[in-house]
Image (spheres, rainbow, N blue to C red):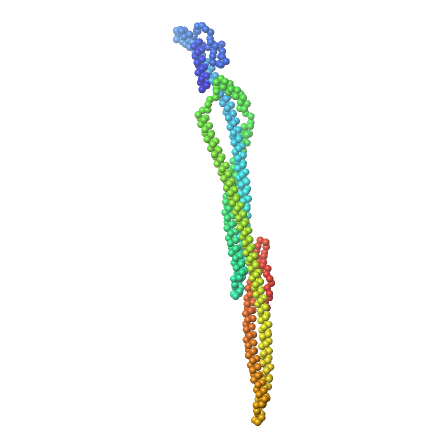
Length: 492
């Protein structure tokens, strides 16, 4: 715009000078360069009234053409000078903008690297914690499986004890405290094993999630590390490329001075053109879009970190829950085991006490049987001892019956012999009855003794089964355990 104005002013001044005659060779420009010195007055040989009889161009025409060419050359040179000044100014502005843009790019590179490194450090920290959680889950799952497998030994022991107790004599198969304790321990062991297996399954599922999360974190870390390496290498190469001295930097002051002189002569910068405004609007949209994209990128990384953190919290809660479950199941199994052992000891003690009582009764019964047998023997001996007296009394009665008839009277001797005979018969019959009664009692004693011995044998067999149950080795983490019982009394 200013160039057009200056050009119009120059043409107007030339037209005024042309009206006054051709320019003088000695004419000089004023300080402003827009007014010329007037030529000397007088008639001009280039007047239009000069005749041209030959049809050739007149001197005026020839001078006018030459003058137009000179003016055109001068104006073109002046325009070229302004264009060069404008070019220098534009170069200075381009260099300044390039330097500013390079600084912005460098700052954005560095800010991007700082943000990316922070995000990368956070992801690496989460990855380390995720690895720790995975290791804890693996150890917890292994401990749960091992604890569930250890319950098989106790279950086998309880089943074996129950099978042994089925071998007791029929009369000793009773629902005692020991049997109920064994069944309760078996139920506790089954529930504990099922809970541990379920806990191991939950730990396995959580381990699968943690492994997937670790893969996501590792993949994101690899991508971000590669991007950071690329940005860092680009930043280093940019620093190396733009840190070398160039000719453009040396001509900045010259371009600035020319630009100032051009502004003084009227060559001012023009406003940005429409394509440049469009580019600037496009750049603003791109910056806003880049800001939104970076925000989405940071939110995605933050969301991944939060998901990893939440998963780590779930892993810790699950591990702690499984530990408490293992501790509670171990406590319950130990309590049921102690109750079973206590019931076993009490049952063996009760059976042994009954056995001792039976053996004491058998001893008493044996003593009574001995006394009864001795009494029976004494009765038999007494019966045998009265036999000679009865025979002698019977012979005397028979011999007195042979007296002569006058002498065969019933005197006192005959009466006494008859009374002795009846007494002896009564005594012997009584002894026989007593012997029979004693013999019956002795038989009853023998029968009772047989029953007591049979009961004693059954209880001894049952107690031996319980002792065999106590002798079964119980596997545990602290070693092998057996139930210590009192030494049973020997059989009679």
